[in-house]
Each structure stands twice: as structure tokens, then as C-alpha cells.
Image (cartoon, rainbow, N blue to C red; front, side, top):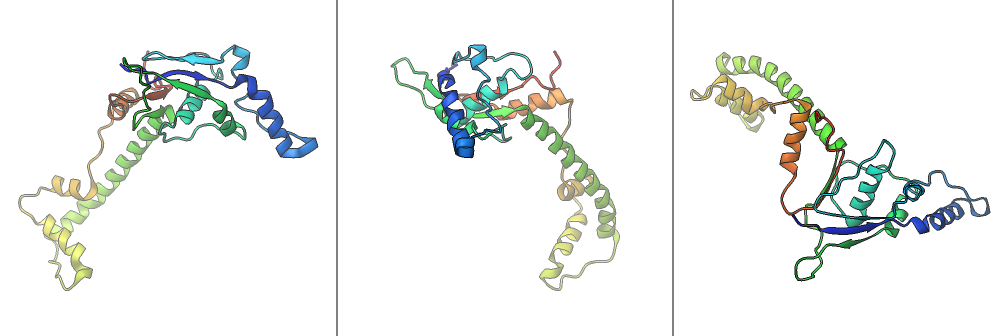
Length: 229
């Protein structure tokens, strides 16, 4: 495996100046700041710089800064993302002060961040699971309505095609009366087919299996959610 990122450095020494500057911008001589996040989160832990290997794992208790660190890295190097991350009035300025070095190949040439590299969060996985459930529920409702519609189109009065305003109903009638098409096939064509649901953990694994590709850089935030130890 390729180590695309070699190191990432946090601007701990510049946090005070960032806060002071923002306070002055907010209130002049009466300067204030509502939220200094992420300043003060890492310096107290002695974390100034991270050096990476092929796979690097951040671990710690709730609120220790794991997700924040991943979000800083992902934002700084420009990884694609779906779910937004926690932010603050200082977050973007903090990101600008962060720095990183890329890994390099056998000839000493620095790598670039591969296209389609991304950060995947637990929110992405849960949103996918909820979206699949909602989609399946909609399909079930549409399928129930489609049974009555199929019966009417199949055995009811013939719809005459007098113009484009009749086209959709006429097309559905022809489809329903196609001898080679069963009711099940008709309903799947018109209502759609449900996505096969598994347990949350299995669905999460399927999600990762679909999203993760070779030769990419990924930040995974809480990938163990929904997984049984």
C-alpha cells in the first residue's frame, strides 16, 4: 500500500495569535470570541504533528479530538466529503495554518492526492441506511397501489390513444397487457425493486465495499459504528 501523506502539522504555536486576531475583529478594544474551537484541543495533549504509515489509527475517549483531527486533515488536503463537519468561526483560519508533507515514491518524487480520495464518516453510513429504508418503504407503498392499477389496466376498459395527453396511460396499459410480462415484473418496472436490507453492520460493510477503491487516500471517521466487536 502507498503512504500518500507523510506528516501533518498542527499550528499549536499560532493558536493564541489566531484567537487574539479574531477577538479584535469581533469587537475591537472590547474584543471577544464565541467559539475558539479547535484551538486548545491538541496542545494540552502534546500533539503537534502526526506521522503516517500505510494505515494510521487515531484512538481515544469521547471529545479527545479524533474526528476534529480527521476533519482538519481532510479539509486541508481537499478530500471529497458528503456530510458536513463541525466548524467554528476559527476553523477555516486554523486549517490555513496547518501544513502537511506528502509521501514519495522510490525515485523520491512526491505523491499527489489521488482523485476520488475522500473522508467517510459515520453520518454518511447512517444516512445511507436511513435512505435505503425510506426508499424501500416508498416502493412498498407504490407496489400496493400498483396492484390495483395493474388489475384495472389489465382487465379494464381499453384506453384509446387520441393524443399525447393519453400517452402515459396508454403506454402503461400496453405494458400491463404484454403477455410476456408477469404482474411481478410489471410492478418492479413501475414501482421499482427494494434494496435488500441486512443488519446495520452488514449494510455498513456493504457501503464501505462499494465506496472504497484501490489507490486512494481515505479518512474514515468511526468506521466501527454498527459493527459488533
